[in-house]
Length: 537
Ligand code: MSP
Image (cartoon, rainbow, N blue to C red; front, side, top):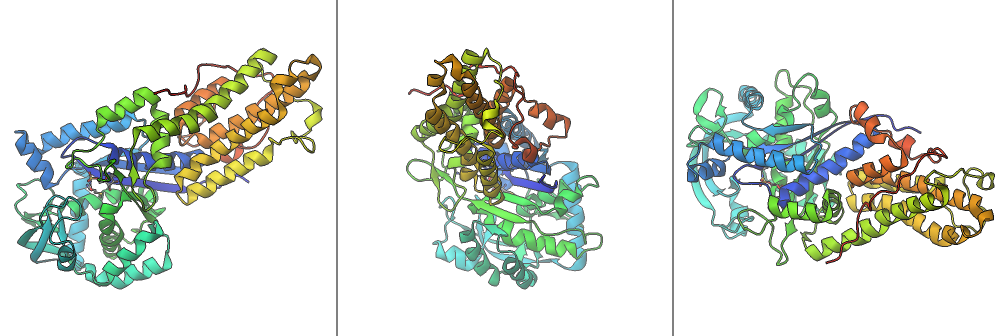
């Protein structure tokens, strides 16, 4: 049965523009892109948002080092992020810049509304501050970590300043109830408990600062204070869809992809701010996100988190090298299926990359596609063979290896099940499973041997028809992961799915496309260059 179209909203963190993008940023955006593409393929009305976070002190500090204004520096790096994501064919529907007028205006409205209800109020902050993360650290947490930053190990600084505060403590119970009623609100499961325990003791949080030199959004009614960069940034998820034509995306329940370093902001402060906002006049439509998915880190061979400040990152030039050597699909496939989506960090190793490329792409989909199209070229003059009556509804007789509608259904169900749980490794494997079935079927039926006897050509035709059909279905399932190769393959077998999606606002028809028997016998099948040439070091 066809899947009823849903609305789906997916976001990434907005990245600091103190420097250029690196592999960590590319990773989260790529994961969100695979998920967004999957939803579009299913026909969902999908909105995918990524972008940059500009009003950080580390941005204005870096700008000063380079003799530029913060805006000039932010402009340069925002362009670098945009170009990197465009080059990597990310399909975001908009790109956030927190210095945009729309964003600033909306944030000002939200804070004004919260000042009105008293959920934001003036006070004084006295405590620890992680300058690198621009994060206030509660006393117990600072102590537990020897007064050092959990992220970069630098000493925390003592701060005392006049601030506006957000009444986080007033939302403890509602947050805890929300966690209780929505067990998948924070994923993976293991990340939940640390947040729940911290919420139980949550105090009000400062949400403004002084001395930002005018870089940031002023607190409405108090120009000396700037809205704390984290609050400004979190609101991006809402500001960019707070327009008449986009509000329904927010209301469908956002899925936020982030890494574990910023979970507290997303799983506690952010939902509490939304609860507070929803009580303000005109904001009753504001609901909570569906899920905060907090992945782990890419780490270097020595186990350190890849980051700009540690200098062990894969920068845009290194990323380009991988794309040039292996192709963009290979990078997507590797990051999506071998990345740190779960609770353990992943090491980025070029050897592993090459192994995965050869085993999962060159030796499976790439190889199977050339084998099948080559045999169709050789035995049937490049035309998809007619299926005979022998197989009836393409179900092979007892005892012969199967490649049939059930194979396709198994692959499609595995993809849907995995993607619903945001398990990208089994999601990628779902398509590869169908390809593997094609390979075993070829081994079991040996069309290349049968073809030596002209009387057996109809049988060879049945076999190759089934192979082409199964590969077509596999390519639909694999599209979110390796879109370029799948689209190239579609052209070769005469499927216009890419055009259909384009004409239909990016939406596909996964359920229909995975139904068996859609390739027309007689259609030209092109061999073409290998989709994934084998890599030899
Ligand atoms: N600007 C804030 C986020 C505000 S969101 C409302 C920020 N920016 S950041 O530039 O530091 O990006 C952090 C994010 O980049 C992480 O949450 C993660 O998504 C990604 N990654 C950065 N380094 C990473 C790794 N080494 N590994 C995996 N992801 C990483 O925090």
